[in-house]
Structure formats: C-alpha cells, structure tokens
Image (cartoon, rainbow, N blue to C red; front, top):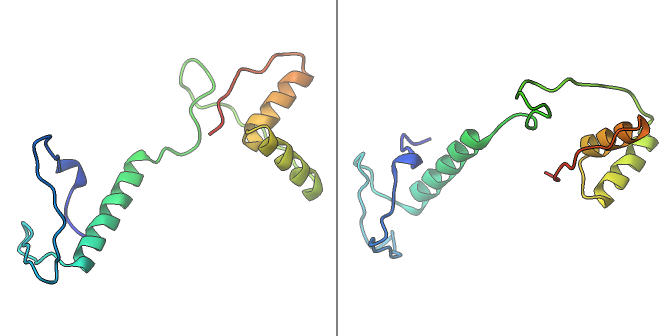
Length: 118
C-alpha cells in the first residue's frame, strides 16, 4: 500500500494531462520513488480501496424519520420459498428485504412506503 491520500489530489480546470510512456520517461513521485506501471497500478488500487472504504455504509438508511436504527424482524423459510421470493423481488426491481417489507405491510392492511431499489 502507498501513503498517498487520494483526497488531497485536485486537478484544476487548466491542468494539462497527458499520457507518458513510463518505460521511456522518468517521473519521480514526492516520496522519491520512480513511477512505473506497476507502482501506478498499486497507487490506483490503493486509491480505489480508500474511496470504497469512505463510501461504505453498512446496511441501509434508517426507515424511521428520527434516523435511529430500524428494528429487525427475522423469520425462516424453506429454501424453495426463498428462491421463489428472490425471483419475485428481482422481477419487481427490489431487494428481498424491500419486497418482504412491502408484502408484510400490505398483508397487515398498511400501504408500504415507496422504497427505491438499491
């Protein structure tokens, strides 16, 4: 891994960006290393991993208006039933959770809120 922070890199509107042949042209990084295709790939992979970690939010947003954690309801199904529900949810462009939430609320006589697919 590198110690470069991708959040610190800003390309201005007037910047000139060009491709260079790293085998023929020498480019030295701030840490003194020569930039090679291998080092560039490592930097790109590291930057992508850091960006993904910053954007990773476990679970979905709270379903309540107060932002608290939403209660969890669990139940068991036969594998065939889960496959059936999974296909039905996919046909509706929904996750299994959104599909089940809508089905349960509908069965209870309450209209389910519109939830956008993830």
